[in-house]
Length: 478
Image 1 (tube, one colour):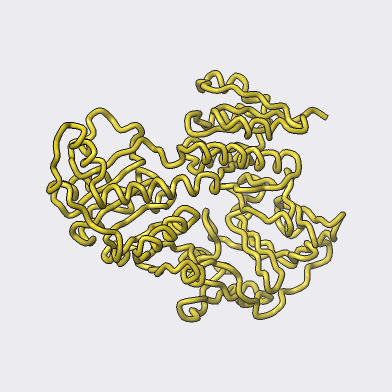
Image 2 (cartoon, one colour; image 1 turned 120 degrees about the horizontal axis):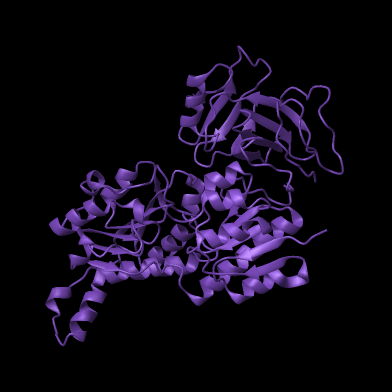
């Protein structure tokens, strides 16, 4: 059997390349600096393509790469990859969320200190032969409130450093559980504008999506404390730069530090450059020797795991599944033609796996221990995004009968849902955590699988017959 070929299209650490080559089970070629037409000419040869931020993997490239199984991004953001095109072709897109965590957190906190004490401006003044102490009076971090938008890996590291400096960390993150927030000593708010209103410093650590674009806009800046400071080392589009210019000019915002921009690099005519109370760095968050080596090794490990073992790690367009519980192989087709997964949840207490699919619109319920299909439920209104979300549930109920409907809110921590009993009398009630969307309990056991449900075969099942045009997911039992 031919060995899978891997194209390293952007420079990654030598140790990452060595790891891809180890054992000689993959054919690895390093070809950097390719233009799109050059990439199109050779794309069909490769099972995997590894990029950083320079090379763009467009829909044309994905269409030309007939054997492509995975695109690996050595970094966090996947702005240079057409994820929708990849998903439609059944190509997995992976990133490396952990490799640059400390590097980015340290850079963001360094910028925060810089704008608190006017360090870059004072440095430039002394370099220019001046000795102006009065103009560069700063503020202390101790006792100040820092609002953290996004409490993933980087946001968590920021919170730890803020606490060490005697700051009060508060956070907005709709996916963070209250128990996790308490363990991190962070106050969690459901209202992002309340976080803005209380914060002396704001730091951004969220992905750029249609929902988060211009999250910080003129209206919300107006609700912040006068003289607050903002740091952004996440994505440029999170902040409306026009509104930022006005706020810095008026004094509503005292200072800003940016490592990312709506257009990179910023154009020659960039109004923010003219202001004295802003600090710039050229997207250096992950630019440390340790981070670059880390993301190179992490993406190499993920590529090897998929191509050689069929295990999906750090994917952005399919659920990440623990290899100890599930083994997802190349038969797992994530394309819209064969059961695209919109969400996945595991009820650890009752050992039930829920896989929600967009096409066909169903929820497949599996026994997480033996892999047997328990039943399927139609989800006629399902769209992209997590299934277990109160707003999404309500959207289901408004689109069609026989879809999931919110029936009970159990206070601030959980809610219950049930299948419309007029069309699905066998369905039971589920209780879910409102923060994590994890299944907390099932009120009763679902009906047993009908005749013809495939039994285990070497610890796996595939293609449940109850799903028209069924998707292929292999589930490994204990």
